[in-house]
Image 1 (cartoon, rainbow, N blue to C red):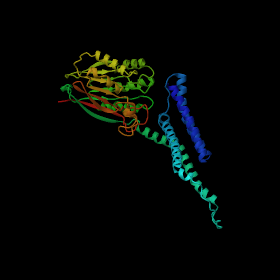
Image 2: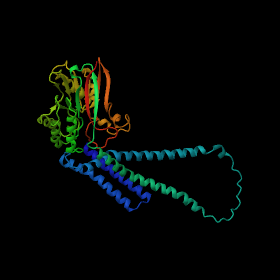
Image 3: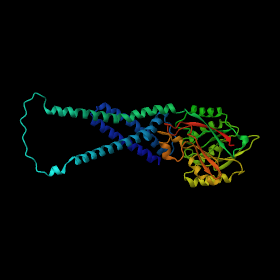
Length: 430
C-alpha cells in the first residue's frame, strides 16, 4: 500500500511538472523560469523517492529526514499537490461550461423567423472618405495585446502559486510544532463516587513520537503533564508515529509521568504499523500499564475505587470494538464500580450500549486536523465524532464521549484543530 502511494505521488509530480512547463512556454516565460521549476520539482521528486527506496530495501520506515524536509514532503504531496489538481480540474470544468453557455446563447440569439424571410436588396454603402487614421490591424493588435498579457499573467501565477503556498504552510507548520494548549474540562456524573468529587485525569493522546517530534518536545509534554498534578494519566493511543525505533525514547517520557492513580495507555493505529506484538512487548517490558482489552481498578487511598477499561486498536471496525469491549468488561473484578472506557478510535463509543459505560475517552482524530470552520473540514468528512464532548441518553443515564485533539502530529499542519493536553475534572452530579 505504501509503495503504491509513493508511486502515485511520483506520477502526480511528473504530471504537474509537465503541465507547469507547458504553461510557462504558453506564457512566453524565459529559460530562468523553466530552470527554477525544474530545480523545485527535482527536489519534490527526490523526497518520496528516498522514502520509497528505503522501504523497498529495508521494509521499514526508519529514515532520518530533517524535520523541515519531512514537513515540505508531507505538505506538498498530501495537501498542496492534491489541492492544485482539484483546482486544475475545476478550472477545466469551468472553461468547458463557459464555452457551452456561449454556444447556447449564440443559438438563442438566432431568429429563425427572420432567417426564413427573403433577403432585402442590398444597398452598397458610399465609398469611405480617405482618412489619415491608423490601419484597422493596429486596432486588432490593441485588443489582442491585453488578452495575451492577461493569459501570460494567469499562467505565471498558476505555476508560482503552489510553491508559494508550500513555503507559507511550511513556515506555519514549523512554528506550530511543539506548541499545545491545556484544555480544562469538567464533567459531572450521577454515579461518580462523592469522595472522588474533583478527581482529575490528564489525557495525553496521540503523542506520535518520531518524525515531527524532538526530544525537547517530548520532555515538554512530560513536564507540562506533571505540572498539572493530575490524579490519573491516560494515553489513548498513538504513542509513536510508526517506527519501533522511536519507542524507547517515547517510553522514557511516559515513565517520567507521575500521578497517584498511575499512568495507563492503549494501542493506536500508528503504534502497530510495524508490529503490534513488538510494540506491546516493549511497553510491558518498560513497566508501563497497557490495557489490551483489559480492566484495571484505580484506587486512591481511603477513597472509593473505580474501573478503567482499555481496548486494543482494531482494524475491523464495530465488530472488533464489540468483542474488545466485551472482553474488557468480562475482565472486570467488580462490575459495580463506576467504569471509564479508553479507546483510541471514538467510533468505539457506538459499541458501548450493552455495557452501560457512562464515559468513553478517545483520541485519533486530531480534532479534524484541517478544519475550515467548526463543522466544515476533514473531521466531519472522516468521522462521526471528531473533537470535544458528545453526549446521548443511554438506558437510565447519559453516556458521554470525550475526544482529545491530541498533543502530537503525524501531519505537520493543523488548522482550527489546536493540539492539546486535556485536563478532565470529574464531578459528582447532584
